[in-house]
Length: 193
Image (cartoon, rainbow, N blue to C red; front, side):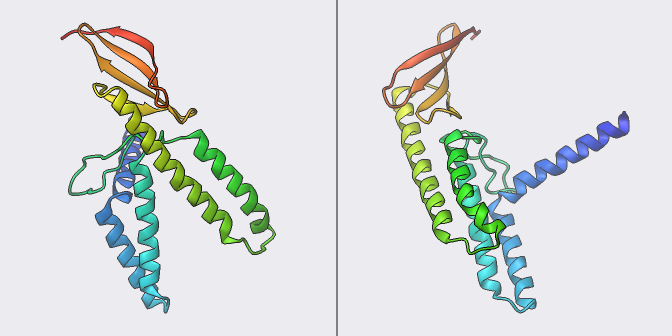
């Protein structure tokens, strides 16, 4: 039991280090440069490999910046996480768009046929437009309720956000429609000052 607990703590620490470090710009830069150098040694175009890898890392980190968990962009120098709360990390609209794109891509890939880049381009265009739209919706929700401590996006309904607000003797949990500004109370929890 003690050995299992120690192993679980060690595994948890390794996973947490991987998540923090793999999204950090300094780590991405060093890793991409290292892979680019190895690519040169193998006779490949190292600069293109390294820059392509870094672009992929950077895009992934920027997308994670838009979710509710955020990213420690400057680890190991700073463990501070940054997030803008635009998209819940599991979003139904993103998953549906991905499913549609994969439905077009996978059959051709399984047949080892040419997969036109238009499918990936269309998905990334859709994703970029959706992320920007969610940013606008989050900003709009914030203007309706500027005193809210946090506004967490719904995983299912793009224009819905959930928030908390301290009142005189309680904390209010609510949902807001960022299109109309209509607020619906979800719960009220007695609080102390």
